[in-house]
Length: 141
Image (cartoon, rainbow, N blue to C red):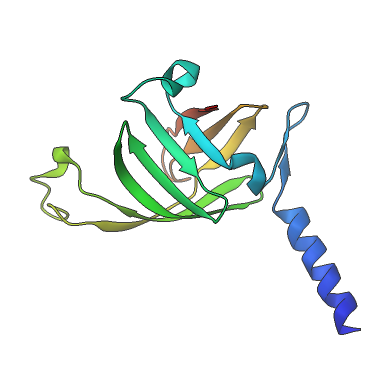
């Protein structure tokens, strides 16, 4: 009896972790594994591209060129990427009164609003904001 319940719970959890976009692709954690460029296909070959690296072990790296700005852990929940991250201070924040040159924890949860074979688009921002930003990521070879 307990074993059957465990199978049902596992199946329901697996079904919840994949989102499907009409006529596009089914999003599962495996879909994200690898390097993604925020600069389109051309960005994949650039030495100064903004990128996200989703590792199979559930960790991620966000950076620009060879410099890492953010590391953390990620997962998918339905149509949302959920990440708990540690963000490095940026040069532009040197005079920021709250962060200065310290690292900070950030929880981010961009909603996936579209996905195709090698690109996906996320909406970034809270529901309280009037205008949300969108970002499209392209899979790098």
